Image 1 (cartoon, helix red, strand yellow):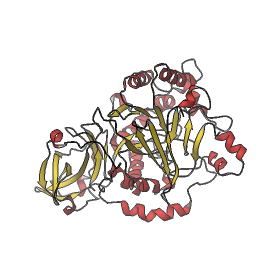
Image 2 (cartoon, one colour; image 1 turned 180 degrees about the horizontal axis):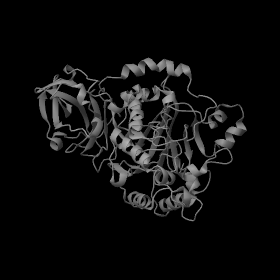
Image 3 (cartoon, one colour; image 1 turned 90 degrees about the vertical axis):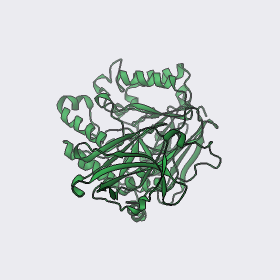
Image 4 (cartoon, one colour; image 1 turned 180 degrees about the vertical axis):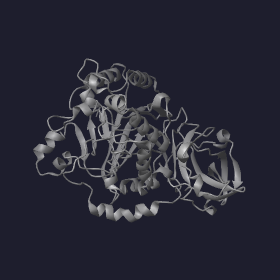
Length: 494
């Protein structure tokens, strides 16, 4: 998304009101998850899966060591029996001979007791980044975890205590709530919307890209510096320990509006360093040749398809008969995975919108799906021809939050796209149309036959996927007042 400088949309009062609260969240352990619904699913006998054992242990008795673990912790890649846990360990900040350990546990029945599931050594890679896969977990279960400094057989320091939930069993079709955001620009730090999101119940966290604004970085050390700055923000320090993460990238993780073909030809080391920093710094799985795309299934409720809408596109093909927005391999995988998915909701994490926006105010078609119509049409026609129901599109990039149909008319009108957030950005001139006094301009840019909601204001976004009601609840939450700016249940085909 281009950088616009006409005006800043985040009000100074909003930043002031939540700055103190956001800063206070740093260094806090994750709270117990509030109940997500009054009548929940049947209980899981977690011990039958993870074989945890009760241990007398109070993590609060171990002091938090920010020097040893300056970036906190993360959980990601959650499946029904596994997850990927992450931290950065600074060995120079601990006594000689001290090592890092990971504990994963469930809450015990008694005070001062935990159900220990895993105690694992931590062997950081270069620059202290550690990705620790854990398996043998129970489905649909909240786990707690922390990284510790161990010296002479005792724990002398730790991260905050985080928590994550594993994915649902294959046969579950219970409601699922996710928090989602995009676009967190340093200019809008601290990210108060993330702090607000951390205080509401959700099962997992989705990031639709532009998590770290790395523009101006060219080398690995520069990308790392920007990523570390992002993760030190109070908003991320509050939210990431609360729930597990699925994330895709957009352009700013690499460079604003970069052309992957041109960068591969003229600056391949920069592209490689940017990808390296992304995979090092987040709890995401790294596929062959830095492949990002994959899917995660939560029972029969939802399957999340993490797409790469940036690094595989080929702008030189855009005007051809076969434009490449997703690589042929990614597109073939996506089609097959959508057709085979047993989940009620198929949710595409698509960093750049799929919507056909109305001309003339929506420019830059070449930077999104709309500029690659033949491939866009091929995917949507496949979904229609195979009668694949409840495909939902989540996106970011535009520094706007909106709820829209993919088109004003025709079969694509039945499909919904939700642009989440923005979590920490603004400056899209179209927001001025929303704030202006001219209803004709608003209708021209955001036609009511297509858009159910649109705003340039920073917000937290929550979505509840409920297969029992065959509906998705979408909420945009004001980070200051915590009031809902938009709250509606949507059905495909409405």
